Length: 163
Image (cartoon, rainbow, N blue to C red):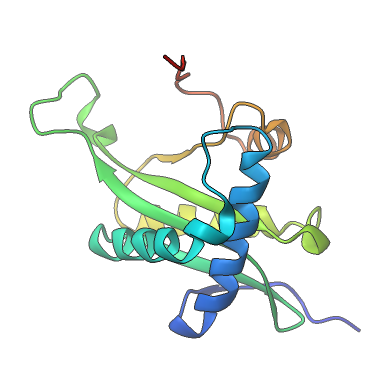
């Protein structure tokens, strides 16, 4: 009988697995966007950067474990608009942002992403904030559909042109 899925706060003992997942995520994104560095070249440095950013911003990193094996991670940071930027209603000027979310292929379609997002939402709410943003590449339709099932809606669209 398998053990239930559990979500934990990231600890240093999760670092190697998180970096492997970051590499896998990057290589997946490279299939959609040629501007991405190869996963093995960037995974450790980028993971460390995001973990530090999460810590500095009062964000958090979460990991998912199934049968005591790491099967996914999520990093959420807290961001704010610039002080003079008043185009948003005040309660939306500080918000959470999921920078990265990855679930190992063998654990997909088992609710792992949803549980990681639940943890991020709880963290952001506990910080007194009322908005969580999740970004994804435009070509990642599977992720967009999963986020929509969890109640997320398109918010902004960024257009890009290589010059």
